[in-house]
Image 1 (cartoon, protein in one colour):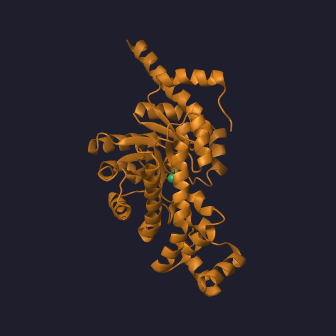
Image 2 (cartoon, rainbow, N blue to C red):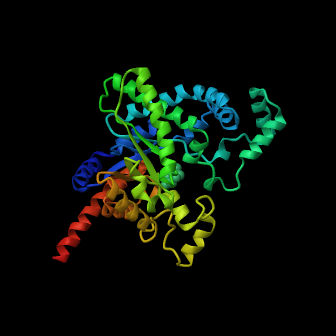
Image 3 (cartoon, rainbow, N blue to C red):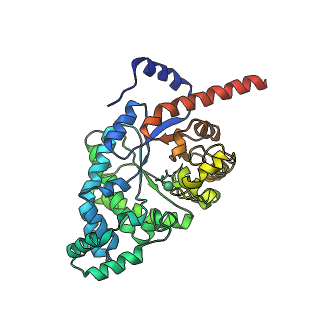
Length: 368
Ligand code: PEP
Ligand code: MG
């Protein structure tokens, strides 16, 4: 596992004396989490759960869960997935020690979970004991023209709340298990993706909280937890005062906020944004460097509105911009509590967060 060299480590401890922003990491495996800790991560700001579902051992159950038309069948598939999810979270908590962990509930583009090609469909149909043609029709029904603006994130949980219930159960059961093993301070942060409306959030949150209460009763034990949301749909940013009535924290998903703010597809914009750069329209792709005037303005609105409702709301960023120096500086000025970035960007983010403070004090001295 790569480590920071002695001198660099020492330099970084000086750096850390300056910064106010915390630096967390985006990690969804214990290995990445442990690597990020070596680089100085102070928590996980985004534990995506999609990749866990792509695991070879799980994908048959995941596919059955997605294409099943009855709750009973979906629950059967989810029961198979639960022990593996519980283990995922336990091992991640373990790797992070006492540091905070934000787990984001499932946010896949649905089509990635569907079987591709007749062979795959045939074997899934056989395992489910249904006709090939019926399954093919079902898959066609589920297919979308524009999956990134489609049935993903919390929208999936509006249709199938049992998916988020299974994940929530795994998050809480793993937390209770690790608490029992001596980590009393465990405080899972459950994050709901793609929220655009407070009523949508209320609906999903109620399902989650019911499941948490069930687990507490079954185990006759409790843990503290937080429930928050990503701010990644522009409507969530401009109604953040309402969203904050239900969310204990916001994490800015600037990848989607940029996609939806500009109307640029995350998957396709690379094909033409290079022309914007070469023709001087953009200095850099807004997916790489945060557009402080536009997308940043949405963030500013959300911070102001969110704080109006909940003065102590916890604020972070987990889009790719969380590890990009000029964006980190912007997040510092905005008053966020932390930035979260991929493990290898953690040292850069620590440095940028300290530079933001130094720059600020230089500016104050100049202004005097
Ligand atoms: C985001 O949209 O910025 C985000 C962090 O979520 P994802 O990249 O998984 O959509
Ligand atoms: Mg997103």
